[in-house]
Image: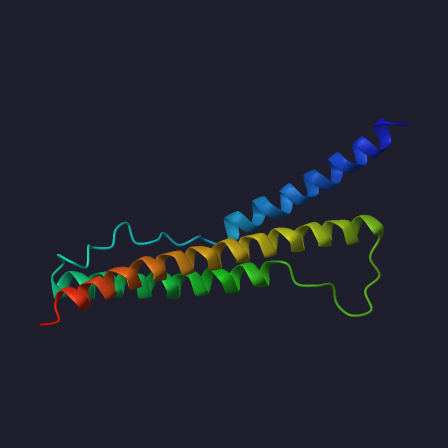
Length: 127
């Protein structure tokens, strides 16, 4: 008796991994700018270059987020799903939400790092 629920749980987990592995291949996660200059000592050109890199990262992340959101469309209205299909759909949706939320958190972290250095730059160069 114990083996059947365990087997079913393994099958659901494998189905989720299969969905997750295809989505990893389908959507390319953007690389955040490797560094943001210290605003207190950076030149105007360095800050402009950093701003450009951050804007590009945010634009690339928007493309990634759209890709993630499009990966697992809901079943068409009126489509009858089996319990296993519903579980797989729910698992895929949880993965999508996790990916989406992690990407947004990365966007916010990069933007915050840049804005902190931009503020430091502005304060250092006001005279």
